[in-house]
Length: 297
Image 1: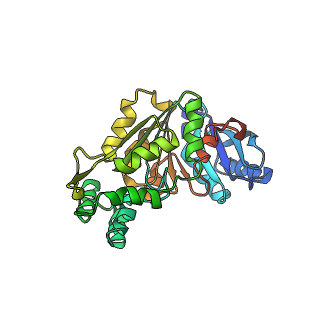
Image 2: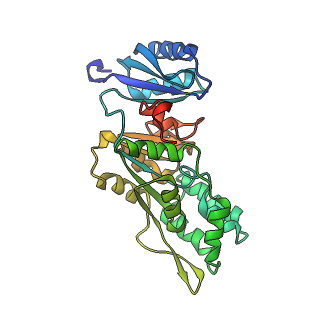
Image 3: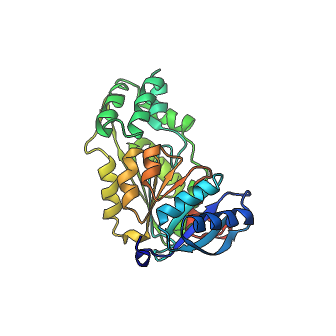
């Protein structure tokens, strides 16, 4: 490895009410064992989150070493040269900003949840073409009364813990926010408003005579569209953050300055710069160095 080409990094460890100085020491030892040079560490909030500096080691190697050494902790590794507080957050909706997959819940009202959820799961793992899988699932909803969409949203959709604090805290510090979903506008627009997103993109379920037609308007919001929206935002990429959980989020996660997989499928977790496996969405605030006193609740 050309050590002269390796920039210093910041390693953020997060485990709300469960982090100790011993975890910092373990992480430092892991960095040293992996060939890096661990530096100083300091609390973001005592017992909750801390930053550890390191050099002479790649971000990927540091992430692997620390995640193995302290498996109960969420680990975010990033270049110390990049802007710490991001000026754009672009986020997936289903199973990221909300706790459910809307199409699966909608299918439940048609008695088809198991069938549709199996396709959703395969698509999010990257085993199926996203557009074809979306069309196949929506076709099963043909003739479902359109009023069921509003009922589903009211009865099933819940915001992910930390979603509102994440977006509103970043906005309070000048960041732009985009909610972009391969799901549906009937869910995404109210969710975006509730959380505080400035911009929202999603697919539109077609309705005729008060019933779902079984089709989706074109063009489809797919993986390419998510990446395109990130690029079109006009923010320097090192100052951007993306978060998602599925295979259709991977191009967006790979392109952003800091791509974070949230309780994600294995392919997305492997592709992203970091993977949140334990905490909620406030881990993304910790990654930017925000102490709890700075959060907008």
